[in-house]
Amino acid sequence: MKLLHTISLRLLALTTVVLAFWSLFFYFEMMNEINDEVDDTLEDYAEAIIIRSLAGEEIPTTSIGSNNQFFQRPVSTDYALQTEHIRYADRDVFIHEKQEFEPARVLTYIYQNDAGQYYELEVSTPHIEKDDLRGTIFYSILSLFVALLLSILAINVFSIHRTMRPLRRLLKWVENFQIGKKNQALDNPTRIQEFAQLNKTVEESMMRSQKLFERQKNFLGMASHELQTPIAATMNRLESILDEESLSEKQTGDLLKAIHSLENMSQLNRSLLMFSKIENGQFNDTQGIDFMKLTEEILPELQIVYRSRKIKVEIHSEAPFVRLIDPTLARMMLTNLLKNAFLHNKIGGNLVVTSRSNDFTISNDGQQPLDANRIFEPFYREQSDKNHDNQEWTSTGIGLALVHTICKQCNLQINYSFEESRHRFQIC
Image (tube, rainbow, N blue to C red):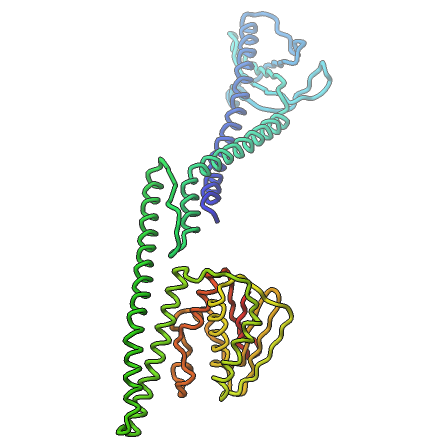
């Protein structure tokens, strides 16, 4: 989940709790205030009637002709002493003028006159239907609650979105940053101290990675270039020693093994040089290359080299697979893939090349799948290759890594799969 959404959801949850608490508080306070106002009115009404009664004025025993009404009756001393003198209640009372019951607030008051007689006075005033009132207040508060919640959420999202703008710019810059290529400088001005520090730290880290990559690449290129000459010179000396007739059979075999090792080293060195040249962008003569035609040019040479393995080659050209790529890189990529298909094939196995408009596939027989997560790593080889008895078929472990680098450089994608006891490399 995005940072903006996480912060917004947490703020929304906290805001909901706070608003719910204050909404309930407001509801109960409003109901209490309404009752207090009605109770004050009833108290004034009751006091006026009691004063008139104590003054000896005649007091009617029924309604006074308005919605407010009272009833007064004498009560016994025992009743007065056992009953609370001031009582409030909500109940339905009968309105004589309307001949119907209505909800009212009722005050019951017990008092004593000068003669020692107790009276019970009941005054009432109709009030708003509380169920309707509760419903009105509830829905009003709910509407206000939702409106406030949505408003706060919108304000929070807008504020957080604006605040996080430097972070989004930084993430986009890091995402587009490519080690080994020319990158734009970070342009992310901000007045937020933490973001400014983050900008500085990330930019310095990426620049260090860029410089380290450049140093490693330059070192690899120079080291490979410097090694090529002494390797070639050593091979020439060993080959000249082989021409001497005084060598024993054992010495000759040892020299041949040494020359073979040097040839592998020379091949590895050339591959490393090729890596360096590809990374430096020295192959930029892009042309539309038909992969099947180029494969048909490469296959005869490889079939001669690996003829002892008796590999059967099948060509299936459904449609031309043409892509813009430097011819040297295309030849190098297909050569490595075809060599790999011969090398990891079984004796007398099949090698199938399939060309379609959207993909180009090279497949061969195999006994077990390769590690798809590591197969394109430099110097990764299966254990069976490391322990191979026939040195003719050993590999440097860098061919597929070179293929992967070429595909990446030329905006191509290569996928590996193992299905029905066959290795498949698909370029698309």
